[in-house]
Image (cartoon, rainbow, N blue to C red):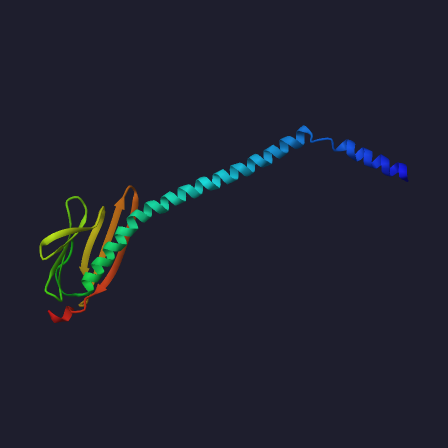
Length: 162
């Protein structure tokens, strides 16, 4: 029995001198596949981050412009014109005008004095009366193949006081 145990230990030590060439190649293949999978995932992650950043550049000015237009419409007492140009009169008697410049920017002007750019790269700007107390606004921006579009209906508080 003692001889058998000793012989078994000696044989086990002889079998574990190192890795064979086949084992080494299989190990390298598995490691290469893992590295390729991680590299592919990181590449896709990077592309996704670029797309999100690119779309975010348009969404922020688009959302801000839509919010500003909506607030002006809500506090207005009258719509003086609509369509490709929107002119409002607010409770203070100020005349607020929105229009698209020659360079495709949405401009906001108060009483004809000074103008500020509300949104760049405007693809579509449209305002339509929607019933007696509401206005439908469509705003679409496009830059470097990235698109942002929003449509909403805003009600006027003082519409009936005309």
